[in-house]
Amino acid sequence: MFDSDYFPYAVTILIAIPFLVFAKQFVYGFLDLKKKELQLISGKSNNDIKLQAYERMTLFLERLKPSNLVMKFDKNLAVHEFLFLVEKSINEEFEYNASQQLYVSQTSWDNILTSKNNVIQLLHKTYENLSEDSKLEDFKTVFLMNYVNDEDYISESIDGLRNDVNKLI
Image (cartoon, rainbow, N blue to C red):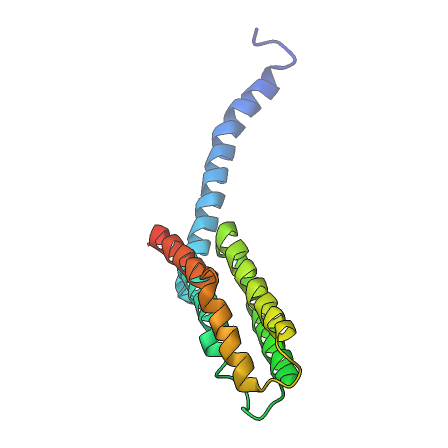
């Protein structure tokens, strides 16, 4: 048995296995400590980043509410100018916050996207149903009334974000 050609290899493997296990544990422990050190240096944990994303998306939804949109821009604009500027503003802010989809739940992101699209669609529908000589104040009033009479999808989206945050905390 000891005079086999494979005996030196077997002994080498028996000696090497505990060393390799120890080395693996050391490397993984070292990497884990470095990760914790980076988190301490940056001052943000994964939950902090997620909470910040939920805050930003809640702020986006609050700004998306028609009651806040009608307060934007000059009162002397034509209706089509107002419509263009509001839609542009919504899309720019959405694009700015698009990276937050990495941190919020898929359901919440879908609700945010639906809310954004519904508000833009409501803007266009209101514009199409008004007469050409309508004033901006008339447009704003009809836009607000259409939103109030419709489903409050923005508040539902905010409630969904709130529920997600409660799960995180």
